[in-house]
Length: 160
Length: 251
Image (cartoon, rainbow over all chains, first blue to last red; front, side, top):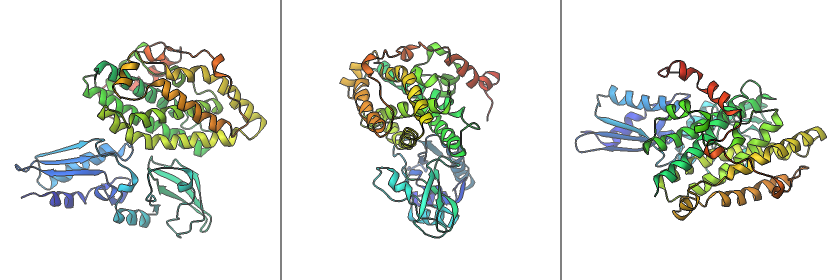
């Protein structure tokens, strides 16, 4: 019999297409999994950024993964019911981001100001002596920074 | 709740974001520095994503699907304010427009996140976090350049004077204005405008720019109900070019 825990374990396999070390579960975009009495699986997802072109790909990847494991009775929907914010990234996800060379977003009170973007901890040398170069990066979810200590550019998965 | 009133509001939100998103995308490859090229391109992507979220809500209310709505209407069927359709001009004009527009849009999203109409409240809650980055970007550059060289200040002042009649028309009231306010959908355009004025003044006061006396400016109303400048139709023709050749193309 299928359970919510089984499904969540399967979904661990599905990674962010642009950050292949990060599972969608750890990213926090899987907002709900339900298994009904007749084994119908419902997976609710929410986008990180409304304009993120990877979201459609991620949704299809979830569907492919369910099918690969023999589940054909499912509904995967993308909604704004529990909107994503960067506090939804799991601890494990943050650790994976750092190992990947992307500074994880700080946990914050969801009141964004320039201060929390200004001195992000460098993922390479852990220095706080860094400057933000631009709040926009190569993808919608990244900002660009420079580390004055190890003298290299790095990116942050930005707080939202 | 009167569905026509909700649709009227959704169309204006979606069309503003789509058209300014398209204009922002015209900076891709042309930004004055690499970071600004990326910033305007990212904001373009965000805004087009936002328009999709609102067009999706419209589809749930029985309107056509988002691509059809975005790509097959003519200029006189668009509800965006005229400010967003004006050509990019030079960087100073694009920056001033971005500053005036995004400071208003974030107030609408903040109000709508508390809306009695739940589908809009959910979307607005999400989008206001994204627009926050646009506002930070605009305010930072206005503060920096607005108190820098004589040329920068002159250019920004002239663009500000040029953009204001259009910017004031962002708050053109809906024909359902009172209904939307009474139903608790949001506090309405006059309330958005009052808060907007406070916020842009706070930024402008930190620069050498001067906000002209707004009472002397005649707003360029009409955009909310299909009256547009000569610049909108060519933008739409370009945006829909691929769609019109092959509506089923995947790209």
